[in-house]
Length: 246
Image 1 (cartoon, rainbow, N blue to C red):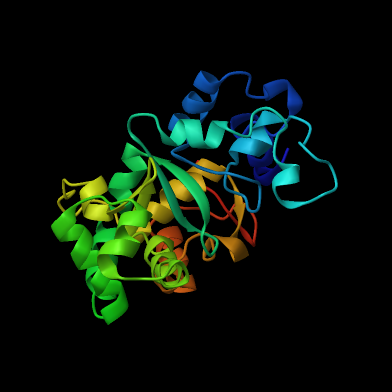
Image 2: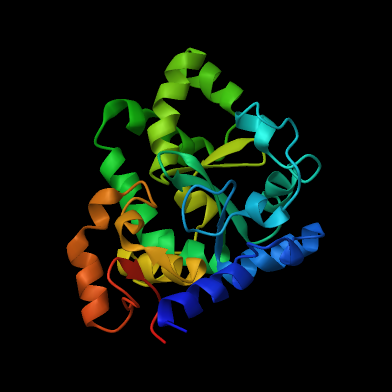
């Protein structure tokens, strides 16, 4: 058996890609998330997916969108997001939902803190970021009133802030990353560690897609992958594929 085939078989097991490993309970889903470190909602890349691991018939087959979500287990994503030490983010694939554990959040920490400072250079983004810093976590309705913004205006400001991790939406409120995750990690984490952790979560992944997994594409150029392979932190089991080292 080739190294790539071995990894793909292991991926099928560890990412629960076969019905015999379907998630049966919410506690099993939490254990799955904590083992992988991060989960997407739906399957749209090599990253492990919560709904894919449920192996449940869709709510409305053939209708697309929400209709393709699991018929009874679709609330699990939100229920996991409410559990201690789990963070819901929108930093995957142009704003799609991602759940991360506290350990993965620590890896993301320097990136998201830097995004707060970068995005404060734009007046509209600074308006929301500075208000949250002063007022604390706020409901969207409160922000509209306190900042005098129309719903469409607030939505247009929030989308890029959430996309880049500067603002997090939890339990119906909006907060800056440094409010949701207040303790700086002392230099731990960053793009290299995030990419290694994400490839580990996937077990094996097409190299062409890893630079598109997260919103900060400028942080994941091909040169970064080459450096991680050269340092032995990632390997190519075959050309075009990436995996953690054996």
